[in-house]
Image 1: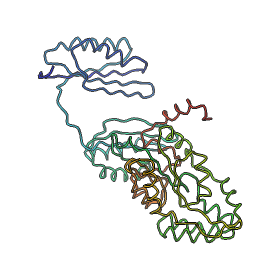
Image 2: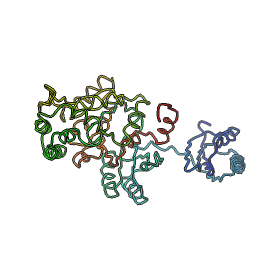
Image 3: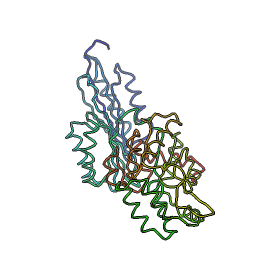
Image 4: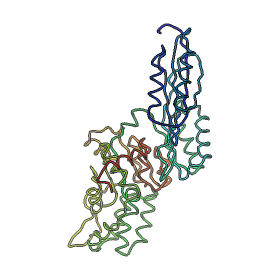
Length: 401
C-alpha cells in the first residue's frame, strides 16, 4: 500500500478479560488488506479495554472489516466501538517521562491536581498503569511533551499540597538500565541511629541525639559531629556492640526490596556514617555486595572514643558510590542512591537517580525525588517493578516463607 493515501479504523473492544481476546481479533483482521498502526491494552479489575488502530488504502471495502469486528465482539460478549479517520504522521513528542504517584490513601483530588499540572505544562498523559495497591497505591503515568526540570518542580509543589509523593524520571532505556543501588543505613535501611543506641548503653543519649539531629539537618560538620559523639562513648564495654546488633530493626520492606533487586541482578551497596561493627552483620544477613562505614576503635574490651581511619562523611559517601560503580563496571548514570540526611546529599546528587527517603527538608529539596511513606520496598515502584511482579516472584521461591 506504499504511495497510496491511507485511512484508519480504530477498533475498541471493552468487556470481561479472558484468554484469547487479542488473538481472536488479530486472527480476524488477518483476513483483510489492513496493516497494524497501533495497539494499546489495559486491564482494570478483570475488565479489558483493547484498542487496535489499523490502516487501509482509500477505496478498500472497510465495511467488511467493520462487520467482522462487530461479529468478534458479539461472540466474545464484549462491547465494540469503531471510528474511521485519516492516517496522519504524528511527530514523536519531546520529553518522554515517567511520572510515579504514591499515596496512602491516594485521593481523586490528588490525581486531579497532578493531571492538571501536567496539562498546564503543555504535556500529555499517554498511558496510566497501577503498579501497587498496597501498602501504598502507586500509579505510573507515561507523559510526553514536558521539560523534566520544569514539570518536576510543578509536581513537587502539587505533591506537597496533596500529601502524596511524586517522582519524575526520564523515560525509555535510561530508567531501565539502573543496576546499582547504594543506600544509607541509619534511619533508612534500619530504624533509628546506631550511635544513639550505643549512647543509650553509655548513658549519654540526650547529648548524642541533640548533636545527631543537628548534623542530619546540615547544621553541623558531619565529621566533627561524629568525633564529638563517639568521644562520649569512651569507656563503654565492647559487649554493648552485640546488644545493639540484636536491637537493630530493618525498615519495613527492606528485605523485600533487597531480595527483589538481587533477583533482577542488581548490585546492592550500603554506605554509612555508622560503624562496621553493625553494618558487617547487615552485609552478611542481606547478601549485600559492597559496603563502607566507619570503625570504632576498641582497646582492652572497651571503646576508646575514637574511630579508626578516615571518617565516611558526606564526601566519603559520594566517593564510595563512585568506587562501588567502578568495581561493578556500572556507569554512574545507572546508579540509584537513597538517603535521608545532609551527609547523603553529595551521593544523591552524584547518582543517576537520587531518592530522599523520609528525609530532612534540605535533602528532599535537593534530591531527584522523595518518598515519604514508611515502606522501603516502594522504591521498587520507582524502578517500574509492580507489587504483582514482586509477589509472583516470591510465590515461586521456596526460600521465601
